[in-house]
Length: 410
Image (cartoon, rainbow, N blue to C red; front, side, top):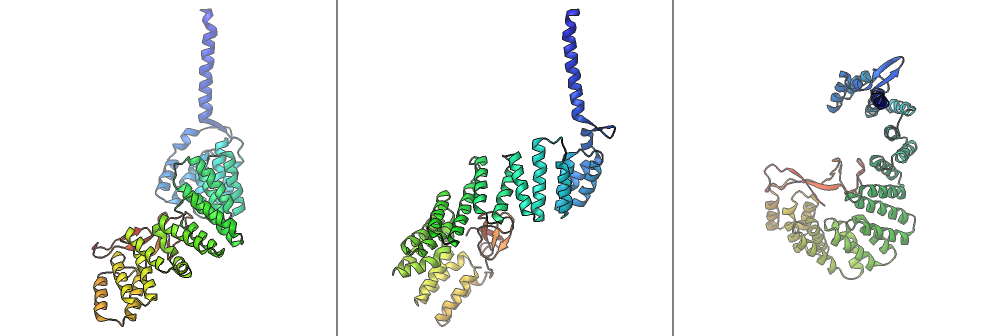
């Protein structure tokens, strides 16, 4: 029997160690009393606070979570949530103070420190302390290099400061983390590269700007502004042929954004003595997409400028059914009708087409945050996402009795 005593002693010591470890994990001595960390989360205040938070009742959530935290100040997650709620309520100074106090705890793990630092960085950004926010996000990334949320916020801060090269570098790190799982990575990389090209163009370095715009197109062939900017640079360099090639590439690669180059191409074709090429371009776009009303509008203006008003009106009347709410179409129709002396039969045709249509200027709307703009923007000024604007317009009355709103590309 005595030969088993060492083995039994070892097993007993192991069991005792497990019990002590579990107790230490669950309980902590504070101010002379033991606190049950698990029961801390089981308090009614904690559960009520979470319920209020889900229901977006911020004030009630703060009250309940404050009471839950009062049972044990080492409840890190509750304190972090409270700080974030203070920030949401606009009490940025209070949020900063709370999160900074949490960072002073000596027992934080590296990951916990990264999370608290992230909360503090968001506090600084919300309060407009840009430099401190940058430093805080950089510290989060140092502690947790794979923290995508911190990297995205860091990128956005660099963008807001027009630090495009730094924003591009951070997005490159995000793309590596994503491993090709997020198609928008290439798009954002291309747009940021395009912004670097814009900065170089403004500084007068048109040669380097041209190379940068080409690089943006190579990253993502649907980067519409890069084609426009590349053509502008080539035109500035006196190479009209190369400028036309860039703008025609936009029409070929991103046909729904081709209208952005219409004025440029019409001018350039005229300079080369080939105005007919603009007509051919518009006709080609219409053939590719029978609902393409912008090409019809551009073609009608081109024909009207040549005093071919009747042909121009026919093109406009073809455009109306595809976008009966486009104010620009109606304005051009009336200009053309006036040039034709308001011929009664033509006016009647126009009135018949528009009798059930609602006049409505197509706004541009962000698909991420629903921000509205009267012009096409490449980056949303509200949510700061790239290339998220589409046109939102009313459905034609003849297609829908309720004339519902529907977002449509370009």
